[in-house]
Structures are given as structure tokens and as C-alpha cells.
Length: 154
Image 1 (tube, rainbow, N blue to C red):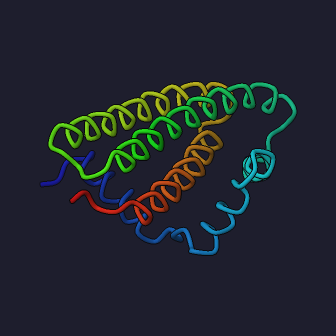
Image 2: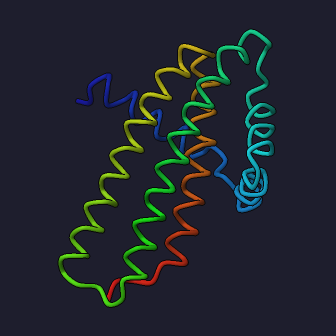
């Protein structure tokens, strides 16, 4: 016999299955908005419909997270560029690059957790989750673009 937790999890998964997925147009709109910091900020502000009081608490959280994301994305890009520029991949360089890539992912996770906790305190959990979804979609698009342009290690 299923437990209450199992039934609730099944119900949540069923609801998610029928929720509208992000369309390619939505992702393209996010990418277009994210080309400039002002565009991204406007998109996030419009998507969250912040009250003045919420905005006062939310934007410092947003700014701190953006600084962390930018620094981490630069670190990943620099590691990849250095690996490509150095010529044919060696085992030692492959290990180093893999370690740097995993370190970036760990840093991303810590930054996302910190931003999530702070956003949940700054605005309602629904708005905080909406913001995290927007950031997740933007990071997924960034990583997809990176993957599309990065040749496989030979």
C-alpha cells in the first residue's frame, strides 16, 4: 500500500507532467533579454511583478547572485579557452580541465543555494522560485551554447 508521501509525490509529478513546458520562443526571449544586464533585469522584474518593498529586498539578492554567476562563467570560459589554446589535449591537462569544470559546478550550486535562501526571505517563495527558474533557464541556454561550440576532447 502506498504511503502518503508516495501519493503526494505522484500527484506532484502528474501536475508537472501537465504543466506547460518552456517553448523555444520563451527561451529565445530569455536569451534576447539576457544580452544586456538592463534587459535581463527588466525581464526578471516584469516576470516577478515586484512591489516596491519586495524590489528593495530582492534586487540586492539578484545583484549578488549575478556577480557570482558572472565570475564563475568567466572562470569556466577561461579554463576552456586555455585548454583549447594549449594544443592537443594531454591526460594531465584533461584531468586539470575536468577538475576545474567540476569546481565551477560546485561553486554554481553553492551560489544557487545561497541565492535561493536569500530570495525566499526577500520575496514570497512563489516569486523566489519563479526567479530561480528564470536563472536556471538562462544558465541552461548558456551551457547549451557552450556545449554546441566546444569540440569534444580528442
